[in-house]
Amino acid sequence: MFRFLPYVMRSILRNKVRTTLTVLGLTVAVGIYCFLTSIETSMETTIDRAAQSSLLVVTQKDQW
Image 1 (cartoon, rainbow, N blue to C red):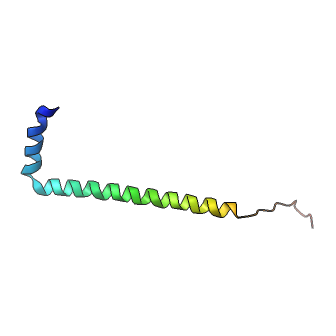
Image 2: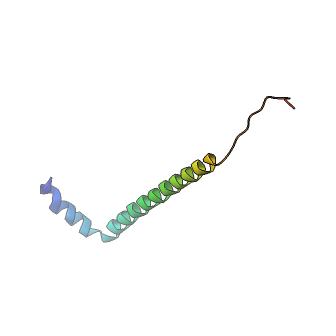
Image 3: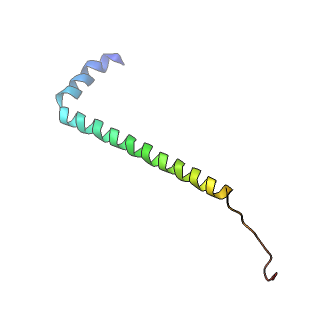
């Protein structure tokens, strides 16, 4: 695996714009994933807390 390291490094350093855009794209993708996962977790927590404090009363139809 390490025998390809010089080739990889040469390729990375040869085209710096492509490397920068690739790293930037990966950073944005991971950031968006973390952001959306945290929103989902927060929504689930909020819904669970709201459901615990709610009271649902079920009655028979035409009981009154």
